Image (cartoon, rainbow, N blue to C red; front, side, top):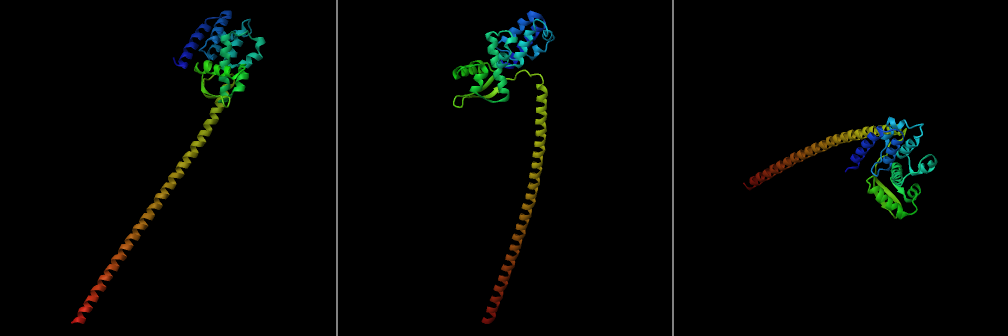
Length: 247
């Protein structure tokens, strides 16, 4: 099944479950969602009123867990582990997968040293096994492992949930790109116009040259005819003179 379609079905399923639960029961749904091996998007669940109601309650820790999986990384968990529950192995794996996606947002060439530090991996073999078995086989990234350069070259990475404030930044980036594209389009149109003008001038010049060549050809032909005529007349005159002398 296509990963996007699978994601959509999983999200719809967990949204329905989370919408119908509260308190500790909702916490169980969040635990299941953040442990699911094929779910990597959580903003729809996070946006539910039932989830928002966890804020300030004895079950608010579940809200923090969901926020961590929507926007955070493994390093974020380590920095805030005192205020978060202990993660189960499936959650640890999921958070490390999401960490790779976050790193891929800003850099398409990820050094092994950086990855090992961010993922708490101790050696290259373990890192490459993780990237192949848990990331590429899962369909969330595609890329090339470069052992010589000790880096992971990203060709594709699934997108994560937008962080608070990130949408405005993305809109600004797209607006800047659109402005640059418009300027480039104007420049290209000016270049095309200049090329068309030069083409017309070239055609005009070529026509003038061709006309001049034709004029020269005609002039040469006329002169040639005149020369031939003179030669004929001269020849006829000489023959007549010769006949007169004979007589």
